[in-house]
Every structure is written in structure tokens, then in C-alpha cells.
Length: 283
Image 1: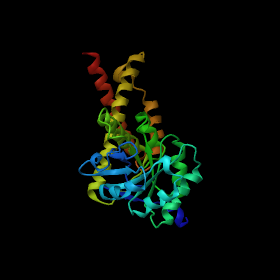
Image 2: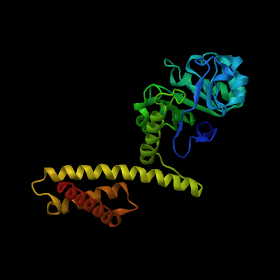
Image 3: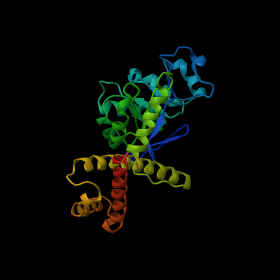
Image 4: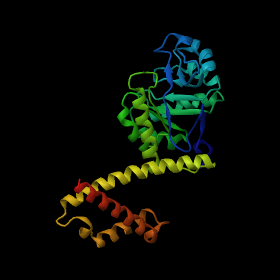
């Protein structure tokens, strides 16, 4: 693989974007929208800030961990170069009409200024996320502030992180929780991790366990529905042939566990679901 396509990882404040779990960034502000300058910045600063022009760059350099080249400014090459020259991580949004090549070209201007700490950001076309990652090797973020319902789809599409608008008070906490749920549950299923430290490994296990708990709860609910539909319910209605076929199919997805290890796990899950269905029937 050529060096231009090697997997990039960018440190953005407390986040390592591009490896490990997807991240959630909820402290992003735009000085195009907040013209109070320093008065608008939280005392502790922000992770990302978008300038309204070159005059904002000294303030951003002092108060932000990263800078956004907003979609409206991607054709302003002098501003792009000035942003890159700050030395901060740069998030490049895609202009809605821009092609993939044009989008990556803006990242190239940053790299030409000696700043290769570039993250790509998309607002609407999630299909471009994976293509941008594959073509450039750079991390990709999805800005879901305009449609928080896209969180899970964005993680599934390969986003290395989600941006939610945490500077809006109404609903911001609920939006952040939904984004974190997508990162935890969808990420645990679709985003392989290779943690290098014990704390990181435990956090990865916690994410997988959260996904397992969610799936087990859903499976138990479906098992209860099956019991209502079967002519013979409860333990008497178990179909051992179907259960063996189920374990065999699962073993194809989990070959290291195999049928030998999966069979007792699935038996315990099925029995737990049947016990719960019986408990509910007697309430």
C-alpha cells in the first residue's frame, strides 16, 4: 500500500480520531454564527472552532484544539492555507456540490502547508464517507447535527466519529446520548478494535457487553412473541433440530467459538428466554 493510503490517525484534544472506537464531538462552534468572538468561547475552550475569516485565527489558535474549514470556505484557498499554517488539526467539510476529488483536494492544500493532521467531514452523503477514507486514508467524521437520527447509519457507514451540536442547549444532552449509543452499539458490532492498554481493552469489552445486553434483551422479547404464536409453547415447544441448525449457522460467523462452545451459550439464552416468558404469562 502506498504511503498516501496508509491509515492516518489524528489526535484532536482528548480524542484519537481514526483508530479505536468512533468518537463523539459535541463542543464545536462556528464564529460565522457566533460573532461575539472571545466572549462566545467557553472558558475551557472548545474541541473545534470554525473561523468567519482570517482575523479569527489567532483567537482559535488560543482557545480551540482543532479548526474547521467550513463548507462555505473550501474555495477560499488563502484561508485554507492560513488555517493549515496554525498547526492545529484541521477538519475539512465537503461543500454540498463538491466531488470527492475536490474535497480531497482541499485536504491536499493543508498537507502542502506542512499540516497533515487532516480529518474529513461530511454532512449529508454518508456513502462518500467510506469512499473518502479508502481514497485518502484520512479519518472521516459525520456531522449529524441536522439529523440526529443518522447517528447509527453514519457509524455503520464507517465514520470515525460523530459531530453533534452541543452548543445548542435545548436537546443537546439527548442528542449526545443518542450519538454515544450509536458509537457503543453499532461500533461494537461493526468497528474492529485492537486496544493496546488494559484500560482501553476494558472499555472495548464494556462496549461489546453493552451491545450484547441490548441484543439479548431483544432476543428475549422475540422469544416471548414466538411462545404466543406456537401451538405448543414453553419448554415443550422447543425445536431441537432448529436449535442445532441455529448454532451451526452462528458457528460460521464465530468460527473460533465453533459449535462446541456456542451450543451451551445458546442453550442458556434460550432457557432464560423461556423462563422469562413463563414468568410473564403468570403475572
